[in-house]
Image (cartoon, rainbow, N blue to C red; front, side, top):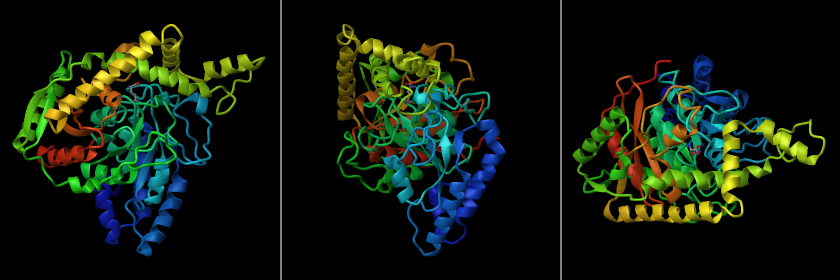
Length: 485
Ligand code: GLN
Protein backbone atom coordinates (compact mmCIF):
# COMPACT_ATOMS: atom_id res chain seq x y z
CA UNK A 1 0.00 0.00 0.00
CA UNK A 2 1.14 3.51 -0.76
CA UNK A 3 1.46 5.93 2.15
CA UNK A 4 -1.30 8.19 0.79
CA UNK A 5 -3.72 5.24 0.97
CA UNK A 6 -3.32 4.82 4.72
CA UNK A 7 -5.44 6.26 7.54
CA UNK A 8 -4.40 8.85 10.12
CA UNK A 9 -3.97 6.20 12.81
CA UNK A 10 -1.93 3.91 10.55
CA UNK A 11 0.37 6.79 9.60
CA UNK A 12 0.68 7.89 13.21
CA UNK A 13 2.01 4.43 14.07
CA UNK A 14 4.49 4.47 11.20
CA UNK A 15 5.71 7.94 12.18
CA UNK A 16 6.09 6.93 15.82
CA UNK A 17 7.96 3.76 14.84
CA UNK A 18 10.31 5.83 12.66
CA UNK A 19 9.19 3.89 9.56
CA UNK A 20 8.29 6.96 7.56
CA UNK A 21 8.47 10.74 7.58
CA UNK A 22 5.98 13.49 6.96
CA UNK A 23 7.93 14.50 3.86
CA UNK A 24 7.50 11.01 2.41
CA UNK A 25 3.78 11.08 3.17
CA UNK A 26 3.25 14.52 1.66
CA UNK A 27 5.27 13.54 -1.41
CA UNK A 28 3.13 10.41 -1.84
CA UNK A 29 -0.03 12.53 -1.63
CA UNK A 30 1.22 14.97 -4.28
CA UNK A 31 2.35 12.14 -6.57
CA UNK A 32 -1.21 10.88 -6.43
CA UNK A 33 -2.58 14.38 -7.02
CA UNK A 34 -0.32 14.71 -10.08
CA UNK A 35 -1.64 11.41 -11.40
CA UNK A 36 -5.40 11.77 -10.85
CA UNK A 37 -6.31 15.39 -10.19
CA UNK A 38 -6.78 16.19 -13.89
CA UNK A 39 -9.61 13.62 -13.92
CA UNK A 40 -11.11 14.18 -10.46
CA UNK A 41 -10.62 17.94 -9.96
CA UNK A 42 -11.12 17.74 -6.18
CA UNK A 43 -9.13 20.91 -5.48
CA UNK A 44 -9.52 24.57 -6.34
CA UNK A 45 -6.05 25.38 -5.03
CA UNK A 46 -3.05 23.21 -4.17
CA UNK A 47 -0.56 24.52 -1.62
CA UNK A 48 2.26 22.15 -2.48
CA UNK A 49 5.17 24.32 -1.37
CA UNK A 50 3.61 25.26 1.94
CA UNK A 51 2.81 21.56 2.50
CA UNK A 52 6.39 20.50 1.85
CA UNK A 53 7.66 23.23 4.19
CA UNK A 54 5.14 22.08 6.79
CA UNK A 55 6.32 18.50 6.35
CA UNK A 56 9.96 19.48 6.83
CA UNK A 57 9.00 21.31 10.00
CA UNK A 58 6.96 18.30 11.20
CA UNK A 59 9.92 16.01 10.59
CA UNK A 60 12.10 18.19 12.82
CA UNK A 61 9.47 17.98 15.57
CA UNK A 62 9.25 14.21 15.11
CA UNK A 63 13.01 13.93 15.53
CA UNK A 64 12.71 15.84 18.81
CA UNK A 65 10.05 13.37 19.91
CA UNK A 66 7.42 16.08 19.83
CA UNK A 67 4.63 14.16 18.11
CA UNK A 68 1.06 15.48 18.32
CA UNK A 69 -2.15 13.90 17.05
CA UNK A 70 -1.78 15.06 13.45
CA UNK A 71 1.93 15.80 13.26
CA UNK A 72 2.89 15.62 9.60
CA UNK A 73 -0.49 14.35 8.33
CA UNK A 74 -1.80 15.92 5.07
CA UNK A 75 -5.32 17.35 5.43
CA UNK A 76 -7.45 19.13 2.78
CA UNK A 77 -9.76 22.06 3.60
CA UNK A 78 -13.04 22.98 1.92
CA UNK A 79 -12.57 26.35 0.25
CA UNK A 80 -14.99 28.17 2.54
CA UNK A 81 -12.71 28.00 5.56
CA UNK A 82 -10.68 31.14 6.01
CA UNK A 83 -6.97 30.48 5.67
CA UNK A 84 -4.59 33.29 6.51
CA UNK A 85 -2.70 34.39 3.40
CA UNK A 86 -4.27 31.69 1.21
CA UNK A 87 -7.20 32.49 -1.12
CA UNK A 88 -10.62 31.44 0.11
CA UNK A 89 -13.05 31.57 -2.80
CA UNK A 90 -16.20 29.70 -1.75
CA UNK A 91 -16.01 28.50 -5.37
CA UNK A 92 -17.43 31.88 -6.39
CA UNK A 93 -16.27 34.46 -8.89
CA UNK A 94 -17.13 37.16 -6.36
CA UNK A 95 -14.45 35.85 -3.94
CA UNK A 96 -12.00 34.49 -6.52
CA UNK A 97 -9.21 36.73 -5.24
CA UNK A 98 -10.14 37.02 -1.56
CA UNK A 99 -7.22 36.41 0.79
CA UNK A 100 -8.34 36.26 4.43
CA UNK A 101 -6.20 37.99 7.05
CA UNK A 102 -6.93 35.23 9.61
CA UNK A 103 -7.44 31.49 10.05
CA UNK A 104 -10.77 29.87 10.93
CA UNK A 105 -10.77 28.34 14.41
CA UNK A 106 -10.81 24.81 13.00
CA UNK A 107 -7.84 25.61 10.77
CA UNK A 108 -5.98 26.93 13.79
CA UNK A 109 -6.86 23.81 15.79
CA UNK A 110 -5.72 21.45 13.05
CA UNK A 111 -2.50 23.41 12.63
CA UNK A 112 -1.91 23.30 16.40
CA UNK A 113 -2.43 19.53 16.27
CA UNK A 114 0.40 19.31 13.71
CA UNK A 115 -1.56 18.97 10.43
CA UNK A 116 -0.05 19.86 7.07
CA UNK A 117 -2.52 21.39 4.57
CA UNK A 118 -2.56 20.15 0.98
CA UNK A 119 -4.92 22.81 -0.39
CA UNK A 120 -8.48 24.07 -0.72
CA UNK A 121 -11.13 21.73 -2.08
CA UNK A 122 -13.86 22.35 -4.63
CA UNK A 123 -17.49 22.82 -3.64
CA UNK A 124 -20.78 24.18 -4.88
CA UNK A 125 -20.70 27.99 -4.98
CA UNK A 126 -21.24 29.24 -1.40
CA UNK A 127 -22.08 25.62 -0.46
CA UNK A 128 -25.40 25.83 -2.29
CA UNK A 129 -25.97 22.57 -4.09
CA UNK A 130 -25.88 18.79 -3.89
CA UNK A 131 -23.48 17.91 -6.65
CA UNK A 132 -20.43 20.25 -6.80
CA UNK A 133 -21.58 21.31 -10.25
CA UNK A 134 -22.18 24.98 -9.41
CA UNK A 135 -18.52 25.82 -8.67
CA UNK A 136 -17.12 28.77 -10.63
CA UNK A 137 -13.96 26.66 -11.00
CA UNK A 138 -15.54 23.65 -12.72
CA UNK A 139 -17.06 20.33 -11.71
CA UNK A 140 -15.54 17.70 -9.40
CA UNK A 141 -16.00 14.12 -10.65
CA UNK A 142 -16.87 11.08 -8.60
CA UNK A 143 -13.71 8.93 -8.38
CA UNK A 144 -15.82 5.74 -8.68
CA UNK A 145 -17.26 6.86 -12.03
CA UNK A 146 -15.94 10.01 -13.64
CA UNK A 147 -19.24 10.61 -15.45
CA UNK A 148 -21.00 11.05 -12.14
CA UNK A 149 -21.18 13.75 -9.48
CA UNK A 150 -19.39 13.27 -6.13
CA UNK A 151 -22.31 14.79 -4.23
CA UNK A 152 -22.26 18.23 -2.72
CA UNK A 153 -21.68 20.74 -1.63
CA UNK A 154 -18.43 19.40 -0.09
CA UNK A 155 -17.80 17.16 -3.13
CA UNK A 156 -14.14 18.09 -3.46
CA UNK A 157 -13.40 17.15 0.15
CA UNK A 158 -15.12 13.76 -0.18
CA UNK A 159 -13.54 12.97 -3.56
CA UNK A 160 -10.06 13.93 -2.31
CA UNK A 161 -10.32 11.44 0.56
CA UNK A 162 -11.58 8.48 -1.47
CA UNK A 163 -9.11 9.20 -4.29
CA UNK A 164 -6.28 9.24 -1.69
CA UNK A 165 -5.39 12.83 -2.64
CA UNK A 166 -5.20 13.61 1.09
CA UNK A 167 -5.52 11.55 4.29
CA UNK A 168 -8.61 13.31 5.68
CA UNK A 169 -10.47 16.52 4.91
CA UNK A 170 -12.86 19.09 6.29
CA UNK A 171 -16.29 19.97 4.94
CA UNK A 172 -19.34 21.89 6.04
CA UNK A 173 -22.94 20.74 6.27
CA UNK A 174 -25.95 23.06 6.11
CA UNK A 175 -28.47 20.54 4.82
CA UNK A 176 -26.38 17.46 4.08
CA UNK A 177 -23.20 18.72 2.45
CA UNK A 178 -20.92 16.43 4.45
CA UNK A 179 -23.14 13.36 4.70
CA UNK A 180 -24.45 13.32 1.15
CA UNK A 181 -21.04 13.39 -0.60
CA UNK A 182 -19.65 10.98 2.04
CA UNK A 183 -22.36 8.50 1.03
CA UNK A 184 -21.91 9.02 -2.70
CA UNK A 185 -18.10 8.73 -2.52
CA UNK A 186 -17.93 5.90 0.04
CA UNK A 187 -16.15 7.64 2.91
CA UNK A 188 -16.97 8.39 6.56
CA UNK A 189 -18.50 11.82 7.25
CA UNK A 190 -19.72 13.51 10.42
CA UNK A 191 -21.95 16.55 10.87
CA UNK A 192 -21.62 17.47 14.55
CA UNK A 193 -24.30 18.98 16.79
CA UNK A 194 -25.00 22.65 16.05
CA UNK A 195 -22.69 24.53 18.41
CA UNK A 196 -20.20 21.67 18.85
CA UNK A 197 -17.60 22.92 16.39
CA UNK A 198 -16.78 26.61 16.08
CA UNK A 199 -17.97 28.34 12.90
CA UNK A 200 -15.55 31.23 13.40
CA UNK A 201 -13.89 31.79 10.03
CA UNK A 202 -16.38 29.65 8.12
CA UNK A 203 -17.88 31.74 5.32
CA UNK A 204 -21.54 31.74 6.32
CA UNK A 205 -24.29 30.25 4.17
CA UNK A 206 -27.21 29.76 6.61
CA UNK A 207 -25.93 30.56 10.06
CA UNK A 208 -28.51 28.63 12.10
CA UNK A 209 -27.83 25.44 10.10
CA UNK A 210 -24.11 25.46 9.18
CA UNK A 211 -21.70 23.06 10.91
CA UNK A 212 -18.14 22.01 10.13
CA UNK A 213 -17.09 18.37 10.23
CA UNK A 214 -14.56 15.79 8.97
CA UNK A 215 -14.34 13.32 6.07
CA UNK A 216 -12.17 10.32 6.86
CA UNK A 217 -11.23 6.88 5.55
CA UNK A 218 -12.55 5.08 8.63
CA UNK A 219 -14.44 5.61 11.88
CA UNK A 220 -11.34 5.70 14.08
CA UNK A 221 -10.00 8.63 12.05
CA UNK A 222 -13.37 10.37 12.47
CA UNK A 223 -12.99 10.06 16.26
CA UNK A 224 -9.46 11.43 16.02
CA UNK A 225 -10.61 14.42 13.97
CA UNK A 226 -13.58 15.11 16.26
CA UNK A 227 -11.24 15.19 19.24
CA UNK A 228 -9.47 18.09 17.56
CA UNK A 229 -12.41 19.96 16.03
CA UNK A 230 -14.95 19.90 18.87
CA UNK A 231 -15.01 22.38 21.72
CA UNK A 232 -16.08 25.78 22.92
CA UNK A 233 -14.78 28.89 21.16
CA UNK A 234 -15.32 32.24 22.87
CA UNK A 235 -15.06 33.94 19.46
CA UNK A 236 -18.22 32.23 18.21
CA UNK A 237 -21.52 33.17 19.84
CA UNK A 238 -23.35 29.91 19.11
CA UNK A 239 -20.49 27.71 20.26
CA UNK A 240 -21.64 25.76 23.31
CA UNK A 241 -19.47 25.39 26.45
CA UNK A 242 -20.06 21.70 27.12
CA UNK A 243 -17.35 19.14 27.82
CA UNK A 244 -15.92 17.17 24.93
CA UNK A 245 -15.31 13.50 25.65
CA UNK A 246 -12.38 11.58 24.17
CA UNK A 247 -14.22 10.16 21.15
CA UNK A 248 -11.79 7.26 20.82
CA UNK A 249 -13.24 5.68 23.94
CA UNK A 250 -16.41 4.89 21.95
CA UNK A 251 -14.61 2.87 19.29
CA UNK A 252 -14.72 -0.55 20.94
CA UNK A 253 -17.81 -0.50 23.11
CA UNK A 254 -20.26 -2.42 20.93
CA UNK A 255 -24.01 -1.86 20.82
CA UNK A 256 -25.42 -4.88 22.69
CA UNK A 257 -28.85 -4.01 24.13
CA UNK A 258 -29.23 -0.81 22.11
CA UNK A 259 -32.46 0.22 20.50
CA UNK A 260 -32.02 1.55 16.99
CA UNK A 261 -34.97 3.51 15.58
CA UNK A 262 -35.91 3.19 11.92
CA UNK A 263 -38.07 6.19 10.93
CA UNK A 264 -40.86 4.88 8.73
CA UNK A 265 -41.14 8.18 6.84
CA UNK A 266 -37.65 7.64 5.39
CA UNK A 267 -38.63 4.66 3.29
CA UNK A 268 -40.59 6.60 0.73
CA UNK A 269 -41.55 5.71 -2.79
CA UNK A 270 -38.89 6.73 -5.24
CA UNK A 271 -35.98 5.48 -3.15
CA UNK A 272 -33.67 3.44 -5.36
CA UNK A 273 -34.11 -0.34 -4.92
CA UNK A 274 -30.39 -1.00 -4.49
CA UNK A 275 -30.04 1.76 -1.88
CA UNK A 276 -32.99 0.29 -0.02
CA UNK A 277 -31.47 -3.21 -0.17
CA UNK A 278 -28.15 -1.96 1.19
CA UNK A 279 -29.91 -0.23 4.10
CA UNK A 280 -31.97 -3.34 4.86
CA UNK A 281 -28.80 -5.41 4.81
CA UNK A 282 -27.27 -2.91 7.25
CA UNK A 283 -30.25 -3.27 9.59
CA UNK A 284 -29.64 -7.05 9.63
CA UNK A 285 -25.96 -6.58 10.51
CA UNK A 286 -26.90 -4.16 13.31
CA UNK A 287 -29.42 -6.68 14.71
CA UNK A 288 -26.80 -9.41 14.47
CA UNK A 289 -24.67 -7.35 16.85
CA UNK A 290 -27.24 -7.51 19.65
CA UNK A 291 -29.19 -4.30 19.02
CA UNK A 292 -32.90 -4.21 18.48
CA UNK A 293 -34.26 -2.25 15.52
CA UNK A 294 -37.67 -0.70 16.11
CA UNK A 295 -39.92 1.37 13.88
CA UNK A 296 -40.32 4.99 14.96
CA UNK A 297 -42.15 7.93 13.42
CA UNK A 298 -41.00 11.47 12.61
CA UNK A 299 -44.41 12.78 11.57
CA UNK A 300 -43.33 16.20 10.28
CA UNK A 301 -40.77 14.78 7.83
CA UNK A 302 -42.84 15.78 4.80
CA UNK A 303 -42.39 19.48 5.65
CA UNK A 304 -38.60 19.41 6.05
CA UNK A 305 -37.67 20.31 2.51
CA UNK A 306 -40.14 23.22 2.34
CA UNK A 307 -39.02 24.56 5.72
CA UNK A 308 -35.35 24.30 4.77
CA UNK A 309 -35.83 26.05 1.45
CA UNK A 310 -37.37 29.01 3.26
CA UNK A 311 -34.97 29.26 6.19
CA UNK A 312 -31.70 28.55 4.35
CA UNK A 313 -32.24 31.05 1.50
CA UNK A 314 -33.54 33.66 3.97
CA UNK A 315 -30.36 33.45 6.03
CA UNK A 316 -28.23 33.24 2.88
CA UNK A 317 -29.75 36.38 1.38
CA UNK A 318 -28.84 38.26 4.53
CA UNK A 319 -25.33 36.72 4.84
CA UNK A 320 -24.49 37.38 1.20
CA UNK A 321 -25.51 41.05 1.35
CA UNK A 322 -21.92 41.83 2.36
CA UNK A 323 -20.55 40.95 -1.10
CA UNK A 324 -21.13 44.26 -2.81
CA UNK A 325 -17.89 44.87 -4.67
CA UNK A 326 -16.61 47.17 -1.93
CA UNK A 327 -15.34 45.06 0.94
CA UNK A 328 -14.24 41.79 -0.63
CA UNK A 329 -13.23 40.19 -3.86
CA UNK A 330 -14.57 40.98 -7.31
CA UNK A 331 -15.70 44.51 -8.30
CA UNK A 332 -17.24 45.44 -11.62
CA UNK A 333 -15.55 48.51 -13.07
CA UNK A 334 -18.47 49.38 -15.36
CA UNK A 335 -20.76 51.06 -12.85
CA UNK A 336 -21.33 54.79 -13.34
CA UNK A 337 -22.38 55.33 -9.74
CA UNK A 338 -22.37 53.42 -6.47
CA UNK A 339 -25.70 51.62 -6.99
CA UNK A 340 -24.74 50.52 -10.45
CA UNK A 341 -21.37 49.27 -9.20
CA UNK A 342 -23.15 47.20 -6.53
CA UNK A 343 -25.57 45.76 -9.07
CA UNK A 344 -22.98 44.97 -11.69
CA UNK A 345 -20.58 43.42 -9.19
CA UNK A 346 -23.28 41.15 -7.80
CA UNK A 347 -24.73 40.30 -11.21
CA UNK A 348 -21.37 39.27 -12.61
CA UNK A 349 -19.97 37.89 -9.33
CA UNK A 350 -22.66 35.36 -8.34
CA UNK A 351 -23.72 32.27 -10.29
CA UNK A 352 -27.30 31.27 -11.13
CA UNK A 353 -28.00 29.06 -8.09
CA UNK A 354 -26.72 31.67 -5.65
CA UNK A 355 -28.88 34.33 -7.31
CA UNK A 356 -31.90 32.03 -7.10
CA UNK A 357 -31.32 31.63 -3.35
CA UNK A 358 -30.85 35.38 -2.81
CA UNK A 359 -34.11 36.12 -4.63
CA UNK A 360 -36.00 33.42 -2.74
CA UNK A 361 -34.58 34.58 0.57
CA UNK A 362 -35.24 38.26 -0.03
CA UNK A 363 -38.80 37.42 -1.00
CA UNK A 364 -39.62 35.33 2.09
CA UNK A 365 -38.14 37.98 4.38
CA UNK A 366 -39.89 40.93 2.76
CA UNK A 367 -42.46 42.79 4.84
CA UNK A 368 -45.90 41.34 4.24
CA UNK A 369 -44.49 37.86 3.57
CA UNK A 370 -42.30 37.44 6.63
CA UNK A 371 -45.12 36.05 8.81
CA UNK A 372 -46.47 33.79 6.10
CA UNK A 373 -43.11 32.25 5.21
CA UNK A 374 -40.16 32.76 7.54
CA UNK A 375 -42.14 32.83 10.77
CA UNK A 376 -44.28 29.87 9.76
CA UNK A 377 -41.20 27.91 8.70
CA UNK A 378 -39.55 28.63 12.07
CA UNK A 379 -42.62 27.32 13.87
CA UNK A 380 -42.67 24.11 11.84
CA UNK A 381 -38.93 23.80 12.47
CA UNK A 382 -39.70 23.58 16.20
CA UNK A 383 -42.12 20.71 15.48
CA UNK A 384 -39.46 18.90 13.45
CA UNK A 385 -37.08 19.16 16.38
CA UNK A 386 -39.78 17.85 18.70
CA UNK A 387 -40.23 14.80 16.47
CA UNK A 388 -36.59 13.91 17.12
CA UNK A 389 -36.89 14.56 20.87
CA UNK A 390 -39.81 12.12 20.97
CA UNK A 391 -38.00 9.52 18.87
CA UNK A 392 -34.92 9.61 21.11
CA UNK A 393 -37.13 8.77 24.10
CA UNK A 394 -37.69 5.37 22.45
CA UNK A 395 -34.26 4.60 21.02
CA UNK A 396 -30.53 5.31 21.34
CA UNK A 397 -29.91 6.33 17.74
CA UNK A 398 -31.74 6.44 14.42
CA UNK A 399 -30.70 4.61 11.27
CA UNK A 400 -31.75 5.92 7.85
CA UNK A 401 -30.69 5.99 4.21
CA UNK A 402 -28.52 9.02 3.39
CA UNK A 403 -29.61 9.69 -0.18
CA UNK A 404 -32.52 8.37 -2.25
CA UNK A 405 -30.20 7.29 -5.09
CA UNK A 406 -26.53 6.54 -5.68
CA UNK A 407 -24.40 9.20 -7.42
CA UNK A 408 -26.24 10.56 -10.45
CA UNK A 409 -24.80 11.57 -13.82
CA UNK A 410 -23.20 14.98 -14.29
CA UNK A 411 -25.80 17.32 -15.79
CA UNK A 412 -28.73 15.05 -14.92
CA UNK A 413 -30.36 17.48 -12.48
CA UNK A 414 -28.84 20.85 -13.31
CA UNK A 415 -31.89 22.05 -15.25
CA UNK A 416 -34.33 21.08 -12.53
CA UNK A 417 -33.53 22.72 -9.18
CA UNK A 418 -36.40 20.90 -7.44
CA UNK A 419 -35.01 17.49 -8.40
CA UNK A 420 -31.63 18.63 -7.10
CA UNK A 421 -33.16 19.82 -3.81
CA UNK A 422 -34.84 16.41 -3.39
CA UNK A 423 -31.47 14.64 -3.17
CA UNK A 424 -31.11 16.05 0.37
CA UNK A 425 -34.46 14.83 1.58
CA UNK A 426 -32.94 12.53 4.27
CA UNK A 427 -30.25 14.89 5.53
CA UNK A 428 -31.96 18.26 5.88
CA UNK A 429 -34.06 17.53 8.98
CA UNK A 430 -30.88 16.91 11.01
CA UNK A 431 -29.72 20.50 10.49
CA UNK A 432 -33.18 21.89 11.21
CA UNK A 433 -33.15 20.01 14.54
CA UNK A 434 -29.48 20.81 15.24
CA UNK A 435 -28.64 17.17 16.03
CA UNK A 436 -25.49 15.28 14.94
CA UNK A 437 -25.44 12.86 12.02
CA UNK A 438 -22.83 10.46 10.70
CA UNK A 439 -22.49 8.53 7.47
CA UNK A 440 -20.58 5.27 7.01
CA UNK A 441 -20.19 3.24 3.80
CA UNK A 442 -22.60 0.27 3.82
CA UNK A 443 -22.31 -1.32 0.40
CA UNK A 444 -22.14 -0.93 -3.35
CA UNK A 445 -24.64 -1.05 -6.16
CA UNK A 446 -24.16 -3.61 -8.94
CA UNK A 447 -22.62 -0.84 -11.03
CA UNK A 448 -20.01 -0.36 -8.29
CA UNK A 449 -21.29 2.90 -6.79
CA UNK A 450 -21.03 3.35 -3.00
CA UNK A 451 -24.04 3.53 -0.68
CA UNK A 452 -23.87 5.08 2.81
CA UNK A 453 -25.98 4.56 5.92
CA UNK A 454 -26.82 7.55 8.12
CA UNK A 455 -26.92 7.39 11.93
CA UNK A 456 -28.52 10.22 13.94
CA UNK A 457 -28.36 10.91 17.69
CA UNK A 458 -29.53 13.46 20.24
CA UNK A 459 -27.75 16.78 20.80
CA UNK A 460 -24.06 16.39 21.76
CA UNK A 461 -24.20 12.61 21.43
CA UNK A 462 -21.58 12.28 18.71
CA UNK A 463 -20.02 9.58 20.89
CA UNK A 464 -23.02 7.31 20.31
CA UNK A 465 -22.67 7.81 16.57
CA UNK A 466 -19.02 6.82 16.68
CA UNK A 467 -19.92 3.83 18.87
CA UNK A 468 -22.48 2.37 16.45
CA UNK A 469 -20.48 3.35 13.35
CA UNK A 470 -17.33 1.66 14.69
CA UNK A 471 -19.22 -1.47 15.67
CA UNK A 472 -20.92 -1.59 12.29
CA UNK A 473 -17.70 -0.99 10.38
CA UNK A 474 -16.08 -3.95 12.14
CA UNK A 475 -18.96 -6.30 11.36
CA UNK A 476 -20.00 -5.09 7.91
CA UNK A 477 -17.36 -6.98 5.94
CA UNK A 478 -17.37 -4.66 2.98
CA UNK A 479 -13.81 -5.43 1.99
CA UNK A 480 -11.31 -2.84 0.87
CA UNK A 481 -12.53 -1.64 -2.52
CA UNK A 482 -10.87 1.33 -4.13
CA UNK A 483 -11.91 3.39 -7.13
CA UNK A 484 -10.01 2.46 -10.28
CA UNK A 485 -8.44 5.72 -11.31
N1 GLN B 1 -27.96 20.79 -0.83
C1 GLN B 1 -28.40 21.68 0.19
C2 GLN B 1 -28.49 23.08 -0.36
O1 GLN B 1 -28.21 23.26 -1.52
C3 GLN B 1 -27.48 21.62 1.37
C4 GLN B 1 -26.16 22.24 1.11
C5 GLN B 1 -25.25 22.23 2.30
O2 GLN B 1 -25.39 21.44 3.22
N2 GLN B 1 -24.34 23.16 2.31
O3 GLN B 1 -28.84 23.99 0.32
